[in-house]
Image 1 (cartoon, rainbow, N blue to C red):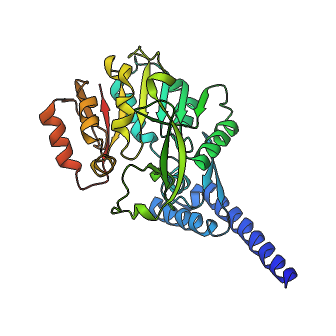
Image 2: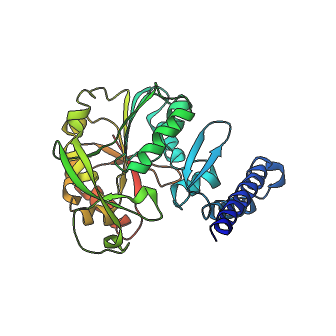
Image 3: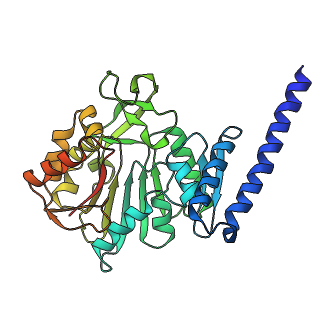
Amino acid sequence: MLKNNFLFKSLKIVISHVLNFIFQLFFYMNNFFQNSFLKKIILRSAFNFNSKYSRYQIYSKLNESFVLISKDYTISQEVFVNGEFGLSTFLKAKNILGPEFIIKKFIDIGANIGTISIPVVKRGYATMAYCFEPAPINFNILNANIFINNLSNNIKTYNLALGVESKKELTFELSNDNSGDHRVRVKNEDGIYNELSREIITVKSERFDIILPDLFDKETTLIWIDTQGYEGYILKGAQNVLKYQIPLVVEFWPYGLERSGCLDDFKEACLNYSFFYDLSLLNPVKNILNLESFNNLYNTYINTDGTDILFL
């Protein structure tokens, strides 16, 4: 019986590796996939199939290589299919900031497995990145991805959440199928994503102002925050960022902010800035930031998955 189980598992592994090789071969033979829609269907199917047999998958092309999480059907799958996740949004922000804006410090809060920071640094858009990621598996893969891209001297990582208080332990819930939707749990009530069914761990938290107290140069620093509704608390603990109006790209997701109970804190923090750009638009335009424009933004995205906003 044990021998049969061993043979069966071995056969599954061999089949998985063979099929993965075939799919990877197809991936590089772009001439066979002039139809990008067909190409994406095949790659998505390949990712889903491989996820049944392997905890991790590899994406490797000319610019970057990534270890991906097989059960992550959002960020990892999109990297496997499209070659990036979030980089196009970064490039919109970089274009708005202009060629004279040289990023010496890129602060990535909610860094996941490095899909933003690694290409930003590796392609020369930033000199140095500082990545904050509290989820243990994400954090370990983030460090692995930094290593395989030869960026260990250019990216510093912190296995921390950021928040209002220093030296705090927070309850953290883990999504089963989206590594980008792990969140700090603030309320013990179920929501539209069945949050109460999620695995719970404890993570350490610090204030932004304690960890990175000297970000006073608004001409060379860009901050990127995507923390699934915890942004208001992070910004409340980042008073130097707000005081000096350090350029900030932040996810604006009303459901997450309201579930975390920090929508008012988020609004108060954002109103320290003068202008904003909605990066979900094809051609983002400059908007004056005030209470009325913030409320209009809220009403636009109240029943959606949100958007990314550049605050200046």
